[in-house]
Length: 96
Length: 203
Image: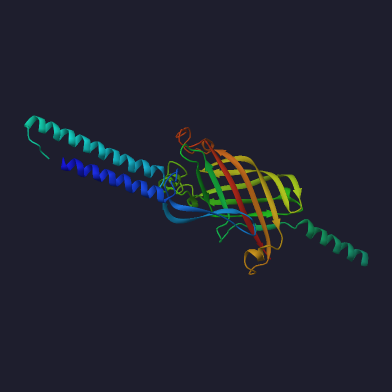
């Protein structure tokens, strides 16, 4: 049971970190960006152009990956709990 | 004798006016010149720019139909914000930047559609080479001549003219053998291209 709780805790932490990082990037609903585009206009020619700066904005792919890992870990913790309960029923003694 | 001299001078002046074509260089150290591309995709449109531009255009405001030139874009300069998308874009399955380092448009004929002061709207027919495939296409192109504006752009270091060239058109990626018939559910077949470049002709 202790192992299941630990896995569930890690899953919750991963989900929390994922949501925090995603929200800090302004809930970006596109792809994750590592080069942040900034639109500019040249004053003489009036040409619109884009400059890129190094950065990180988490996108939907990051959110889905984080949520996916967290879900898998939660599922693992449930399986571990069920297995240990089955063992308790069979042996009559709790085991971790 | 005097009449002969005057007529010779007049003819020389006329000839010099008639051949007032100027060559503009589109190498841009400021990185303003760019070509933007957009492809529709399910999550969000794939948008990026390329600013590795060079080339020359010979242009005469009095005779724009005689315009000639070529614009070259370095394939490796194409940029998208997502790192794995960028890797795919430059990779061998998509544009193969290593094997096809340049995207080139070379003008063959220019048909003038409208001429308003310093802006000329045209249809340019030329060869677009993309992903190693050359095809003749006709695209709308506007030329804006900015006489004596080079000094403003260079902080007074150089005198001369500027020529701003803009164009918006679409190409099909299958025409240029870019994942022909593949990934159609994730990346659109049509590529929207938007070019805005300025060339300089120093004096």
